[in-house]
Length: 378
Image 1 (cartoon, helix red, strand yellow):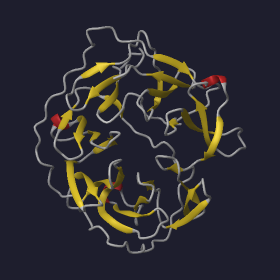
Image 2: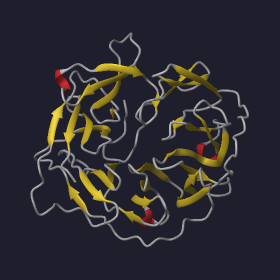
Image 3: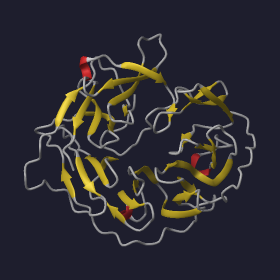
Image 4: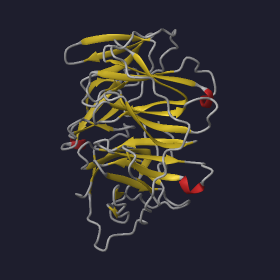
């Protein structure tokens, strides 16, 4: 079970591998046809951007509409919930008995607790549309297409991440994973989904692969270009055009999350020498606009440009959490839930926005069950 504070930002992967891959012998990957050039983040700071301040969140002049809150499961079954691509099912990892293998279960949001959850697949890393899955098997990673039964075995790769086109995947290789993280070399590879034509697209220190952007053939990496450089740079690489954009440079950048269409990123900076930089930021992925939030808490994207925020509660305060929504471009915020009307008790940051942006599923800290929150319309 996660031990993260529910008030702090943190974005867990929907499905983690059940076991860590055993250390594999290093092997040179096959060359990629027309490979993209090796890209490393520059040691310089990203260009200065005029940052408009985000207005402090204030309650709207009209009463906050009352969202619907409904229980989905019973028995305290679940952690780390997720969603089906069509937003009709909530997914979670569970097992039918202590001796049974874990699997992915689904509960319908319409029937909820009235109908028992059904197992729909094995535990692994899925593509966005769930047409592909990757999982460890002995000393290899297996990539499978469940609809056809096709399987490909990949050697000497870590945990893979599928590209939105379902034709490629990426991973970070750390030849010496015993070194301190800040000094550890990380090579980021991209390959066809069957593991062929693998090529290294970046070499970094104290970093690695962040994830794919949903638009085009773009990937995010973060790290130091050399051991002589102290700060890390968050970079977007367009593998189709071979262009790169350095978005931000700081010693500690965490919680990177892309909006639904990939035009915005949210992240946070901590323990920076320039205290004005510390906090949560939203930034366009083309580098043209950035905005710092005046609040601190957990966050997830609702759609292309609206960020949901659950502010951290002051120490000793035990009232319910609130959900706020901020427009990334304007910085205007509005409160979506009133803690006196909609009691949200979220366990260890376990909450997830549906793909269509209409719902939030969360683990209730009181009964340890999954609950569904229907959000007010934008």
